[in-house]
Structure formats: C-alpha cells, structure tokens
Amino acid sequence: MPELDLQHHHAAAMVKFVCDSAGMTAIYKSAAAHRDVERWCTERLARWPVAHRTMALATCIGRTHIVAAGEGGGPQQATPCVVVVPGTNFNAATSIPLATALAAHWPTYVVDVPGQPGLSAGDRPGQHRLTQYGRWLQEVLDEVSPGPTLLVGHSLGGAIALACDVPQLIGRVLVSPAGLTRVKVTGRVLAATLPWLARPTEARSAALLRQMHGPGRRPSYELVSWMTLLARSCRSSLAPAPLPEETLTRSRRVANVMVTGEDDVFLPLSLLASPAARHLGATVKTVSGAGHLVVEEAPETIATLAAALMSGNTTTEL
Image (cartoon, rainbow, N blue to C red; front, side, top):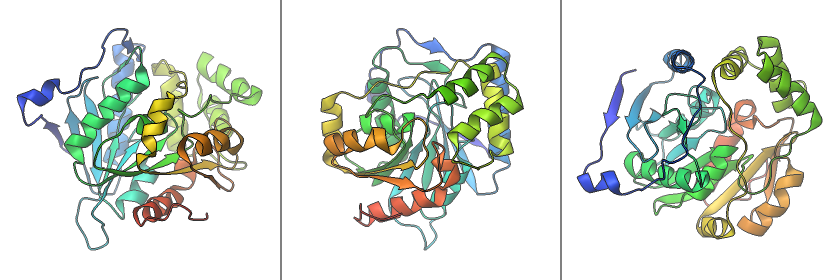
C-alpha cells in the first residue's frame, strides 16, 4: 500500500511536545540489519489481505509508522477508533491477527513504537522512557484519532497506554501490561532466551516462543521467522519499571479493562492482580490456555473486551 507522510497542521504543533533526545540508543546492529527488518515488515504487511493504508508521522522521538485498517465506514463500524500499541520487539506487521479482529468492527490504527524493531525510528529514548513514550502517544493520537479513542496496549504497549492521557480517550484494554509491577523471569525462560540471543536459529526461536505461548500451542511460521531475524538484527530492551504513582492515579480517569493469559510467564495473574486492584481499581481477567502472546492466541477475545468496554461493560466474563 502507498505510504502517506502526515505533517502537523500548524507550525506551533511542531514544538508542542518536548522530548529529551539525550541518551538515545540505536537498536539495530548495523544499517544492513535495519534494512532487513524493514523489508520483513513491509513484505508481511503487503501480504495482509485486509484493506489498509500506511502513514509516517514526524514525532518528538522520531518517525512513527502507522497502519490503518477498518476505515471503510460500513454499517458494522462504530464511531470510536481503536489504537493498538504493541509490546517489546513487536509491531504492526507482527500484530496482524489482532488488527484483523479489531478492524472488522472499528477503524483501527496500529503504531510501530519508535525504539522498537519495525518501521518507525530505530533510536530508543533514554531517561524517563515511559514518560517520553506517553507524550509521544499523545502526539500520535492527536494526529490520527482526535475523536473518541480506545487504546489497546500489550506488554510494553500497556505501560505506554497507561502513561498517556488525552481528552478523547474513552478507555483502555490492557493486555498483559507492563508498568504496574516488575516482570517475572523464570529459569525456563532464561534457558530458552540465552541460546536464542547467542546464536539465533529457527529452532531456538520456536523454543522461546513456546515459553511465551500457552501449553501445547505451536508458534506460527511468521513469528518464528520474525524472532530469528530479531535476535540477529537488534538489541532488545529490558522491561520497564513500574510507572509512578501519580501516573497510575491519573490513568483511572477512564475505564481500564485488564486481561492476561492464564499461563503468562512474564506477567501472570499472581503478579498483576494486586497492583491492578490497588492502582486502577481493576480486576484482571484471564484467557484460558493462553500465554504472554494472548494477542496472537486469542485476538477475538480482545475484540470482545473492546466492544464491551465501549458499551460501558467492564465486567464481561471470558
């Protein structure tokens, strides 16, 4: 699909957000590695049969790539827009199952987070990263979704969604969200991660993905291919620290629905339940048989939660 460059409507908007560029970290191991990642993402999106378009937005932390789908305005579509913020090491091209499920009902925008592998800028913010990401997402929303907006954030994307508060926001669906507590890393996860980082192969990528999936689930060929390329091409980031108390308190202005996989190895119910209730007044729902990649395993469930939240129901049983 053709890519459109979005520009700010007024010169003042170019300086509306001030982000600290000091300490920015390049995530790609080489220029060739950067091109390999961009090629993989571009080709994956080109094969997506759902009608969509792409955009490039200049932001305070660099170029931001956005994929838009579900904009046909058919009778099945509601007024609100959905904006998806993927997790660490993921992007629009790896979020096609979730984007497909959401775009069947609403105009849906999936952002590639700058500083994460994908089609956005390859430099990761330095100090106060989540604060900068919150400002970045506010800037993106003001451009692509100035009307009623629902955020869907997974993992790191959940923390970024919590760090963002704009007037048009009507709620958040937080999927295995970071930002509330420290991420759990088990010995089994480390045993799969270290060989994958040291010498990535498809077999090692599949072994790591099996840890991130629910029991007995087989990783897709696309994700195995992506994770292999990722380890060869990029420097991964660590999970973010919990957000400040004042940020979490502010995030209660709108309804927050939280869900995690029953077998999530990073952010299980046992870790999320207490901080979700304390900070957000939310009860964590679980998806049976799913792991940390619940957005891949149960995208229709996420769409069901989004629909319920839009109708004012935050207590939907799964």
